[in-house]
Image 1: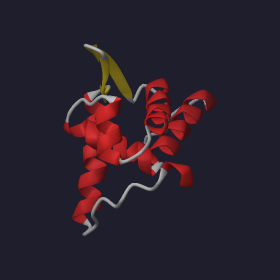
Image 2: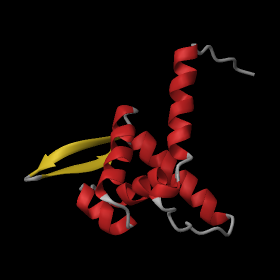
Image 3: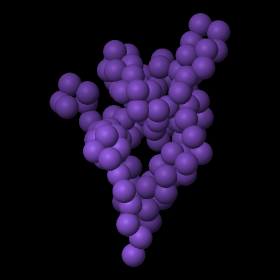
Image 4: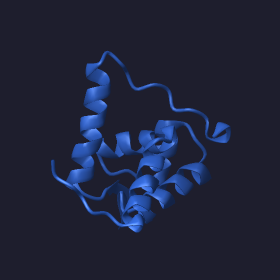
Length: 112
């Protein structure tokens, strides 16, 4: 059995990453970003949440390096930052669906 040495800082970063993934709105954002890069206004329409709420979640996703953005005219387009994260998210979704589940409705931001 292989042993891993991790610092408390690395474990805290992993815990923050997993906390973000445990939020239904963040998962919804990442699910849409798996399909294509999107701006905040497109995510607002797709997810049915207010712009400030979507923006706050994107800030947290950016801080952790899960998403990046690129200017596109007047808008910032957000995208998943790496192939590894994209592959991981795709795996999670496919496993969830292979067990007979479907992606559920995203909860209201105010209820969090």
